[in-house]
Length: 266
Image (cartoon, rainbow, N blue to C red; front, side, top):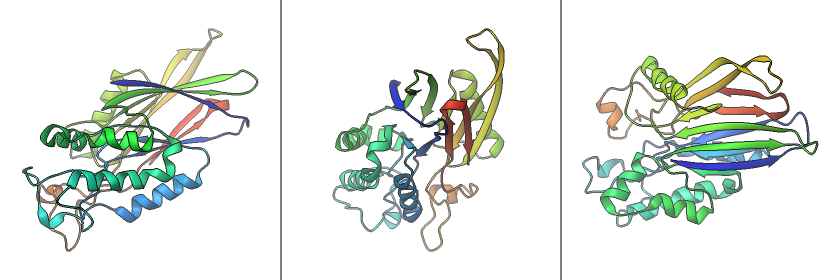
């Protein structure tokens, strides 16, 4: 687990920041919604208040010595003589236009798999080439928003790629809620489950003046850019298992520091 502190100065009381979780892209296979993820990257470029957290599994990284290998689903741009490097290059080019907005990149199980099976440190290389923080598999990121008048608002975020699998919406929500119950934070983002599910939990707390206040923490399963079903393409793992279609895209967290408002929309 990693920990990172982020400091942001803002001027306007109306300032509204947006955290974009980006992960589970699975680039390098024909099921990847490449046009959709590039559109989201352009949206982030155009958002002056954007903050980005990478959620892992940016590329598929499955090689011929892996039981999941299927030559017929590999994207035409992948160099089959150097799969890890060609997919690493694609991820770097995708993120390069928004690298200044990236708080850090998590690794996922696909990055871990190629590291262990092929001794290839693609995730570390991506972070180094982009000049961004490698947040490992799970991380706390604390963001402190400050104004010139000295006021400060701190938001603690818990980010993890996640693990295991759940098929129904209820099972996925349960996994998200277990994370929200187990780790102290204000914002939670969990990847891996290829779905967009959000949750808001109100709770009671005492403020600095000893007054009882109701606050909220927000969480989300952060979606995917991988199409479980794609016409004219050999069946994906999810299609062979008859999983429900995946939710393409990702949620967005909103922070209004001056009003201490947090929200998430999927």
